[in-house]
Length: 203
View 1 (cartoon, rainbow, N blue to C red):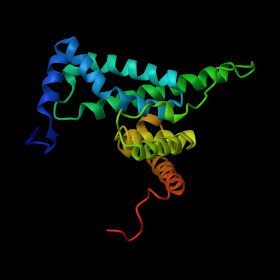
View 2: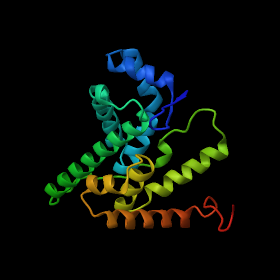
View 3: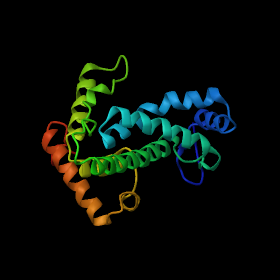
């Protein structure tokens, strides 16, 4: 581990070396990056699309795009954050495409419409504490239960670490709308996860 003198970001030397090898076409390094970061990309994609199949497609497309563009990746940035942003944008594309398909097939009985996936399908890490697993499962269920417009904004902000401006540009909505949807998403999550919200006045 080291600190980038320009950004102050903590840089993982092993991760940077792996990225360099992957950028040169090293399949082993690419597989290692995939194994390390696929869960984070999948979690964000699943929250946005609400479908296991779409989330898997988004993850696969995201890694392909990431590996194709590793030469332009800023090495002082976090690969996981960058990847999750790519996955989030791909998920939005799939979400828009799904809406178009539904609009086209509105006059017929189509059973292939969106069916939210139980968040518990996203397996927790092996050997993790049971109580922690249950807490994460509750959080996933609460996020999945949010209205789509709120869930998407929350995921882009919390998982993809996108700014208000980046979210507004991605969704083609005003920044004020982003702020409003994020506020309501947080409010609904706090109402459901009352025991996880920090107590008022607590230091």
